[in-house]
Length: 184
Length: 160
Image (tube, rainbow over all chains, first blue to last red; front, side, top):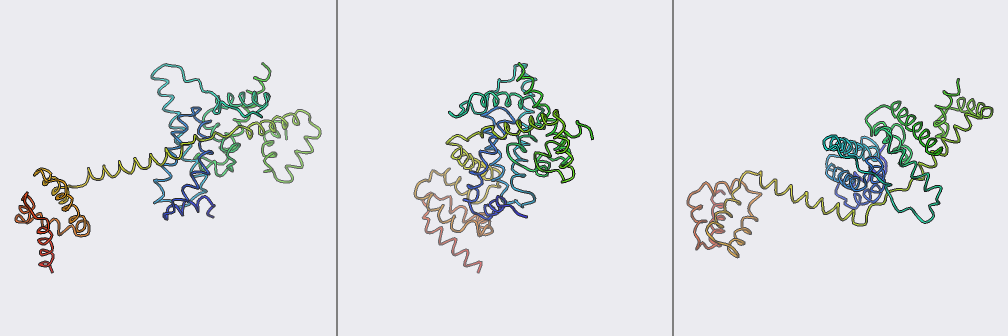
């Protein structure tokens, strides 16, 4: 079955540039959100999101819809994100300098963002940042991006049972962390 | 089934992924177990908090930056192709004429003639270069470009 987004990609492969623009508009906020929370660096996440779309653009000639489009694009984003985290880790090890203090992805909350919700959000962001990378990726793809377990398994190149386990452990860790922070 | 096992199934319950028998069993248990009800409430709150995380909006110039990068990469790929390609007759011709100090209209006219004839007929080009007489002709700074065209057409005619 070819999903709507894959149909757009096929149209782009056949020369319809507007189809690519539609995909770009649809997926830019999603990929940027995912990568910002995965790598915890807004500027790098923007660069990586550009990289994701450059790859998509350059792969058009060879594109065949073997999976849902969302699976494909988040698979690329996940790989680039993990590579970036590995590079950041190497930089950290080589320099001995402290990792950058990573703030909230969006430092300007909306006016209706009530104090309590805002505090919960900050605590949650902090707890998310402490998760192992693959747990964080699996959880974000499920909870924020709404991907199914099968899709996440393909994007992360692992099994469905492994994805369920990653998400279960991530949620347990978040609940424990939030409990602990809430008790402070 | 223990409470710990049931708690592992709470996310599946919230995601409506449990079979009807498993769901009914869990609901019966939840009705009588306060600790598991509290765990379910915590899972619900977490799901709500995760869903409420604000999306990250791309900056206004994000798409423009993307297309600028694509344009740069295409230019780069073109330059690399030109660098890596074997030197063809056109490149040799231009460099020779440039070495002779011929520019402007004359060079442009040569470019036009050769662009019209070039890519489709590589054999012709190579053979012209292989022919010393024509090559010398192209080196002549007083060369009448119309004459070049005549020569090329005549050569084409000879090939029949």
